[in-house]
Image (cartoon, rainbow, N blue to C red):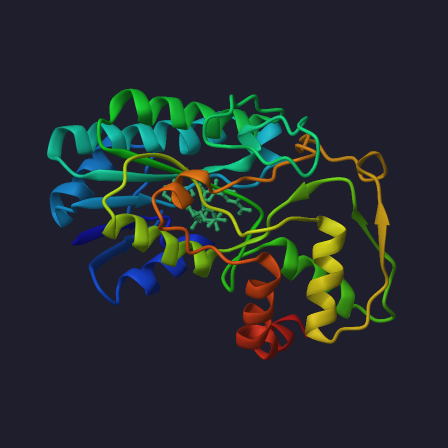
Length: 291
Ligand SMILES: NC(=O)c1ccc[n+]([C@@H]2O[C@H](COP(=O)([O-])OP(=O)(O)OC[C@H]3O[C@@H](n4cnc5c(N)ncnc54)[C@H](OP(=O)(O)O)[C@@H]3O)[C@@H](O)[C@H]2O)c1
């Protein structure tokens, strides 16, 4: 299979590139090669690589900045995927587009998860752009796969775990307040890359949730991660009101991988198991980087 990965230098893009290269011809690109907001850039790539599959991992992912940088957020998160969909309709091939748990409003009682069939209702501009991207892709592309994931971390790039580690390593250790009233499923980009490969092999189509199994709060995640890292810390729980951010976050963004399970192809693991493996693989590297 000829697979093109957009956003190939991001968290998920890096892991997709590494994992899929084992069994497929992979062409990984990022903004330095092509700007996905320009149809001509996207079409040039498609003509050059002639992919059977495009995985769109490119996005404007800074949730708070999306509230003020609306034009660029829309261009990258909506026009970009639209360009891939239009191009693949013209040239053939299947689009795997990555979406987000932030398309839901999070008002559901914890721990009831959101299913693929639940109605989205975003509460932030980032969430709005991701939902609009889904609608555009579904409308244009007859051969689309939309994958909604959540609370992603990986070895590459910026993420919550890296922030927690950096804060905890500061001397003397300051108190770190972390919200304890938002619930979700921390998902390792490496595991998701394997899940995407499994989906490509199964030739799926439609909307899929792909998050780690189980759930926690950001506070619970910070405590578990730093504990596994063996880092002394002063993490204390707080409420969202005590930590105001420009963008609202859903209180409950737990996703159930119902469609993957129905098809018997769910390879996502409990979030604690993935954190344990992640720490075993990257503890030393991350501590060296952070110090
Ligand atoms: N991170 C999460 O917690 C999370 C949760 C749920 C869903 N998702 C979704 O998962 C996907 C992957 O997320 P991620 O965390 O891997 O993102 P990421 O690390 O921010 O990577 C996104 C990549 O896209 C590139 N990009 C930005 N604008 C571009 C453009 N105009 N043309 C081409 N490339 C461009 C970025 O380049 P620069 O770095 O140079 O801008 C970056 O390399 C996204 O669709 C995101 O919405 C993420």
